[in-house]
Image 1 (tube, rainbow over the protein chains, first blue to last red):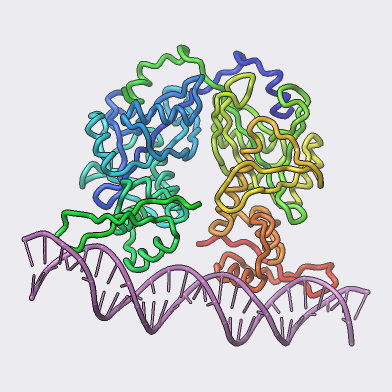
Image 2: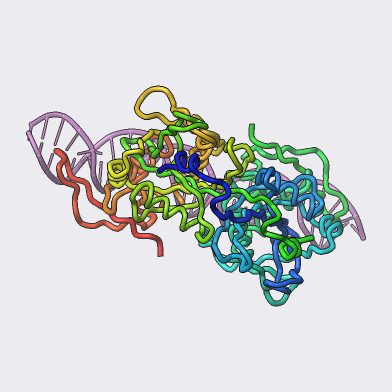
Length: 241
Length: 241
DNA sequence: CCAAAAGTGTTTTAGTTACACCCATGG
DNA sequence: CCATGGGTGTAACTAAAACACTTTTGG
C-alpha cells in the first residue's frame, strides 16, 4: 500500500499523533565568537538546564510561520534570516511525551542581538565552542562567560551542533555572513564573522580580494568613524543577480 | 513564557495535532541520468498523478526508524544510504488534513534499484531533469521515458528539487557518490555518476587524479571483464580515516 | 592490425596564499 | 610624527584543466 492508498483509508482519530514543535537557534557573532540565546528551565525535566526558545506548531500554521511567530514572541524581532535546519524525532527526546521538533536558526546582527537581550529578560547570551573540526559534526558547548560549559536540556546541544555545521558549510558559497552584520559594514567586520564561525585566522589581503572579486559587495562611499587610525570603507551586501 | 513553561502547562489533549509522515526519495543513477521511484495515485486528491512512497510515523517510532521501515516495506530493501532532507509543513500541502512530511532520500546503486523495481510492481522508474543550474533550487521534472514531464502529487516536485540540490551540494566533499555504485566499480562508472548528477561533462584525466589524490579509493587489483577493449581497474570506497 | 576505451605525462591556467609595503587618520 | 589598522602590489605556490600521448584488450 503506498502513501496515497494509506491516506484514503486513514481515520484521523485512529492513531495517536505526535506533537510538533519548533525550536529556535537565535545566533549571532559577538566579540569574535558565535553566540546563541538560551533560557533557563525552572521546571522538570532538565530543571536548571538551558534550553532553546521554542513552542508548538499550530494546527493552522505552517512550520515557517511558526518559526517567524516564535521569533517575534520570544525575541521581539520582526525580521531576520530564518532557515530550517533539521527535524529531531527521537522517541525519547522529551521524557514526558512524544514531541517532534523542527529546529530553525535565525541569524541576527550583533546590534539586534543586544536589543533582543534587553527586550526579553528571560534570554541569556551564551558563547559557543565547537570541539570538532571540519565536517565531523556533533554537539557544541555553550558558556555564559568563561567557565564551565552549560548543561543543555533535551537534544539542544545536538541542535546547536547542526547549526554550527550548517553555518560553516554555507558560509562562503552563500550570503549568510551578511545576515550577521548590519546593513553597512567594513571588510574587517566581515572577516571577523568568518574567523569567528570557522574558528581560524584568515589572511587579510587574500580575504579582501576574494570578497571583492565575488561582486557581492557594493562600496557605499561612506567611512567608518571614531577610530584613531585610517577609517575603513563601508560596504553593503548586494545579492548576486 | 518559554518552551519549558509552556510544556509544563500543556494539556496533550487540548490542542489538535498534525499527522507526521515520512516521504522517501528512492534515488539512483540509471543510464547516465538521475532516477527516482514513484507510484501512481489511483484515488483523489491528485488521482492519476505520481507520488513518492511514504507513510505515517508511528507514535513509538523515531523519524529515522520510520524512514528505514518504509524503505523495507515499499522497496524491500534492507540497507541503503539514508539521509533526512527537509521537512515540509505548509498548511494546505494535503487538501484533506494537516500532514507535516519529513522527506528522506535513500541512495541506491543501479543494480539494487532494478531489483527493487522487480520486487515492488507498483513502483515505476522516472528519470529526473533539473531545469535550473547551481544553487538556485526549485522543483524538478520527472519522466517515465522520453516525453512529457509527469504530474507530481502534493509538493513532491519540490521534494525532488531539494533532493537534487542536496545531492549536488554534497557530491564532491562527501562520499555519497559511492552509495550510488556497487561495492566494486571503475573510475569511469564513478565519473558517470558525477556527470549525471551535475549534468555536465568532466575532463577524464583531471577527474581521475582528483579522485585518486583524495585517498578514498582503494584499488582491488581486479579488472572489469567482458569489454572488447582494455579492462578497467576496479576500486573500492575506503572512507577517510 | 584495428577499434575502443583505459590510463599517464606535460603544459597551461587560474585561483589562493604569503609577505612587503604604502596610506590615512587621531592624538 | 608616531602608532595603528586600512588598503594594495607582487611573487610563490597549489590545484585544476586541457591536450596529446601510450597501453591493453577482443576481434
